[in-house]
Length: 349
Image (cartoon, rainbow, N blue to C red):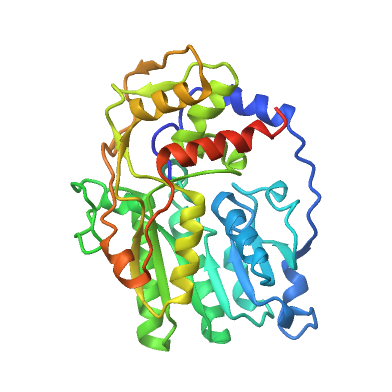
């Protein structure tokens, strides 16, 4: 999720990136009709489904699953994903360009489903409130497929649910009514519990905090604020910070998120879990770390915050994830930023 800059004036930067990057679509894919029930599609060999697998977090997850020798089906409608995120991945995988709401009728023999294919930014829902219904229907389609296959689901939810609550944020906090986006995610969490009670479908909802890392370009203005700062600074632009920069986020590197997703799938836990570091950094601090690491003589521009219901601070209570999964984030912010900078240093600009 990124409340922080989705409506910013940096669209020209993303136009620059798109113009100067090779984004030709080279990944193999099939249509959803190829996987309808009763058709021999070889689906029995493709045992793990990742919805949103061509997106930022999803493609990093797919890469890790393939490195373990797993066979993967990716379902993505490409709203904030890109086939370019998958083009260099090695292993047995296939892409279906489709919306999650279409998957319940697919002829797939699955042992696991990772459901990340949910619109993931609050401004998207403000512009189109009917996305709430789409998120709910997509979740129902996923859980119907899981029920039929007898498999477990790990799905993305969000730390935005803690809006209006003081950190550290615990999973047992009472969720307030604040936003279309959070209502959609809360509904998905309740649907997951319903399928457990009615049909015994096990699942874990991973409440992501502020995730950053490689392969965010397709998200454009919805990318994490860390990545937006980095893009601007590497392009010689001046980063824009809302307010005085004292707002804080629990920034968690995508490789740690992938570890948490896999640990959740391998566990027998059912419920929701925070996925964060337990530490928070201000936007001023993030800018200064990037400035020092990039060795740039540049200053940020501070402007009045135009966003209503802005979340001033997030920080995960990570005790439940440690207790039930043995999960703790390994990357510090400085380590994650150095790796991210190295990644973009090897990307064509």
